[in-house]
Length: 356
Image (cartoon, rainbow, N blue to C red; front, top):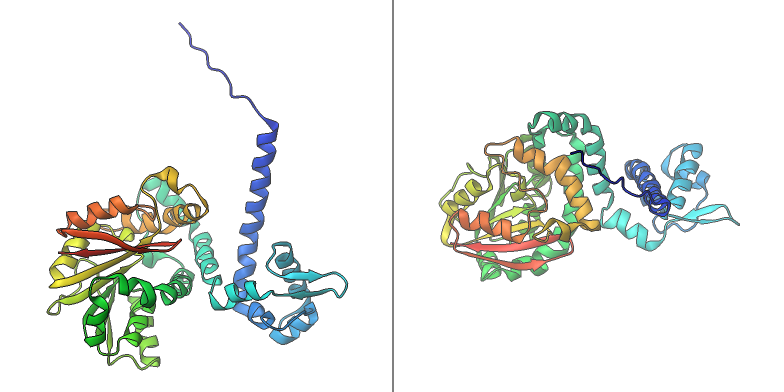
């Protein structure tokens, strides 16, 4: 006996609403490239605090071409990034936008997005094959954009909130502790801690040799090489060096192919009273709880970056950037830790403390 199915009812109002959303997304996607251009050319910095400027005045300040600048300014005005005065035909960068674009370093996120577009063919092919795409295989804009985007958040929270939330760790660092910063990338978190705690010694580990080379360069420039070493090593192979008082993972545990194996190695590398601090993207425990603007960013980044990175490694657990607290707890306790708790959070991060 044949079965019949009822075609879904087409509702014009819902279609129109969706198309309106799609148009907004098209504008945002196109404008992302202009943010990268404005950042590279110093256009936002030149506008910050300068008051109203004509396209010709901004072009002169930045040694760029007026016709391109005029179009760029109008796109930014249409996007609400700059304000336009029709009477004077001048554009102005409000102080709030200036702070976000030149101090908070929001453009770093758009450099990450730029890398995602450049690497789209690799990810499309990975969808077909199931293979991973390693962090090192991405466009270099990803590495620099990640540092720039994450650093302000660490500067705002790491010393003032996150470390003080760890049991007894603030005093240890002041007196002098041994710290391993695993998955350190360009070393922004490592150097931030080192500058705050001059009696402590730090080693930054990352499997990506290019990032380690860059971190060494910056540490040398800032006179920190007597206090910090940067070494190429993975989360399961970094040297124990007599044990650490603190091991830190900043926004990287979910990227690892074998996070449980990493947890086991962290446990073996800690002193008996040592602490593991894990900073992860903010996520609730069920997908539907993360279907919101922040989750949209993180799921998209996870599709393009985090999940492929994990699948490129051994085990390929592919936790994803929205793993959530309970999944992280399973990984940490599965690695042998008996104490695990959330100690802090921001709209973008969850911070955990794990102890033996």
